[in-house]
Image 1 (spheres, rainbow, N blue to C red):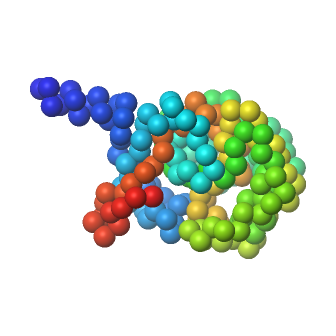
Image 2: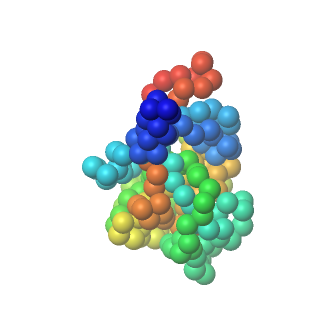
Length: 183
């Protein structure tokens, strides 16, 4: 009984396993691959650009492609504001911009504060993924993108995510055996 209680407490507050549900993070994470997520790390430090995180998206994001932005927007810019309600689903994406950053997208690469982030060897590029008009990430929010840029429903469509919706950082894979390792 004590072991069960301890296992449940660890999952609730420290480390929790998640299964990758879609191809939005390929080639970094494959469909069905399993990751471990550190749930307490962000109580002591801020998330940073490059972190792969599990989070709750805004309500409406779980429905797939389409207009899910919280405000009317120019179709040449990323969504500047998410809907106000948090969905119950869990998503996994990479943080590409943080609070106060100006972001646009060129050929699938984030352009953060006027500089294109082109050193992304882990992504599937998307030459037609362009949102040239920049937005500013609000205080306390993070802009997420999947590594499979052409097949990822992410902050480009539904806006930056409040820090409070971030569950934790994915730090290791444990399944399948040939993909065991750190992230």
